[in-house]
Length: 263
Image (cartoon, rainbow, N blue to C red; front, side):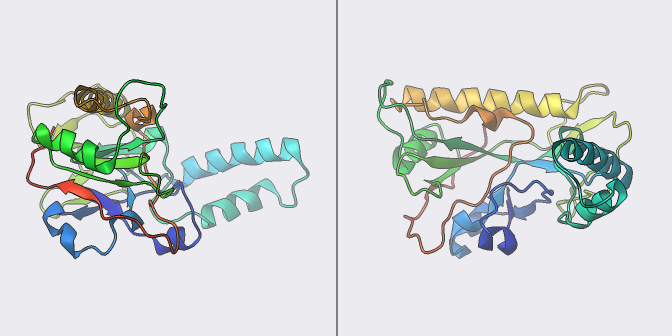
């Protein structure tokens, strides 16, 4: 499943970073034909829990102190904290320590490549074909700029990772309100993967994403594609995307190979 979030407010106001949380909505790639435009969704494979009131108070107290040192504040610290908390979108703040799981999908952004580097320039067609040659399910489309060489690649992994109680496999939903004071056990839909009592979820996710980024980069390089534009931040546990669209811009349909498997 791919994890999508349609937030019309963000789209209408061209908000690029969804810093106030992301609770993924499962989506079956087999139903992609029913979507009018795949670009109007935000996307993240990483799921975050909401911050607690205490965490928010501490975070915004620090922000208040930083702001107050730069300019004269027109509200007290308490007023500032209450104001900032009230403005948060439901879903919580995306902080590294708030990571609670990893979905069974991933994405890589490809920025404009260095044309002096070896390889043909990436396009949604040749990137999709390279992944398909390896039998991997993928969807590729242009970024909001509509540059034919600036792309987003979606793919699947064969497992999920999550803290105990964070994910309900029966309803495929996440509990982003649960506070994990000292999480200890990592679960996976594949019981042979990353089952441990003491590993940091953030570190495990970083490791998974880095390995996937390295693997896909090699696939594209082996296909003769210039990989210099691949965004290395895709391997960060806080990775998340904005929608890939601009108002009144006409985009080509995504290239996709939906009969493939997971990494």
